[in-house]
Length: 231
Image 1 (cartoon, rainbow, N blue to C red):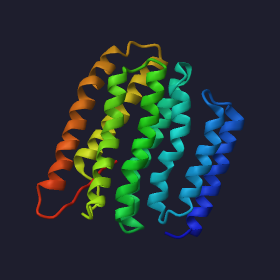
Image 2 (cartoon, rainbow, N blue to C red):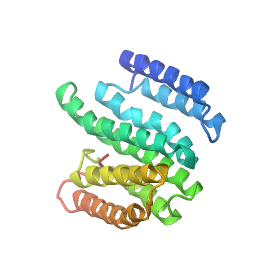
Image 3 (tube, one colour):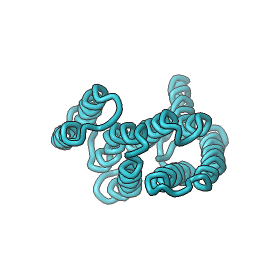
């Protein structure tokens, strides 16, 4: 992969926005982590071609404010806003790819990685702030980590996976964003979030299991391996 002009421009702009966010808001949590994270994502983003992939990469940048706000119960309203923005990027990146770029393995592989980084950060932060139980956070992390490990295993066995969106993966990610965002919004508004938490404890594991079954069938149930992951 080579450095792209588009990647440099967007990475520089988002790095500036990230620095402005740090200096302007004084976010809660490990302040020394945020600038290195923005810098790391910006360096990687300089090598990412295509506007659609850059839109997907926004979710990796959003992992920093998502972690910050998830660890501070007084900022859960802002976390809900971050998740709403992330959900919007997840909806439009595929449309942009089809209209302006050509969908590729890079885009198909990048999407679940940034989803996993963002939602994994949220899950960890919400456990630390005692908003969701540890086991539910583990399910959310496993939703993205296990398919990534399976894909790596396939590649290590010289079986070239086809990385693309799956309906089950898209639905499970959307459900996680909506339910976790709903919990945060209810808590921010001082409303009883117990029903939303209970719903998340049922729906998220079922959606995750359905995604694993679909990915397993895609990887091993067809003559040609098409291991895939969705955002």
